[in-house]
Length: 100
Image 1 (tube, helix red, strand yellow):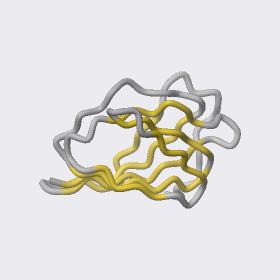
Image 2 (cartoon, rainbow, N blue to C red):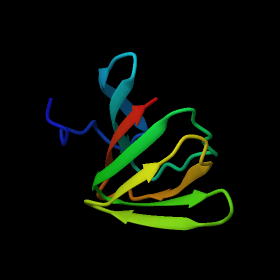
Image 3 (cartoon, rainbow, N blue to C red):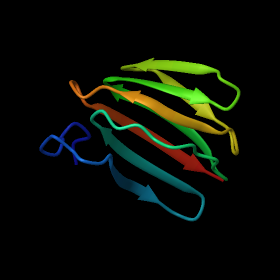
Image 4 (cartoon, rainbow, N blue to C red):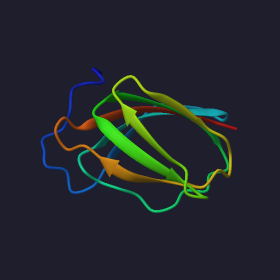
């Protein structure tokens, strides 16, 4: 798989593809084209790398973070957050690593 081989657009929903998964770790490629999210409160740690596009996240308490291509972020378990913006052109290509 080439991580930049993207599906036909427009996408009605974000597309998450599990690249590797076992009992302790999951690695996903996520493609976003303007989608946002509700609040997440995850049991897992998450490392995020935005490989392409622009995005913005909001954390519980009002802190915001903007990401551009190459930006990374660590989200510890139970740090409530949501995605408030993703670029459609170019699409956002996320590489996310989740672990317990």
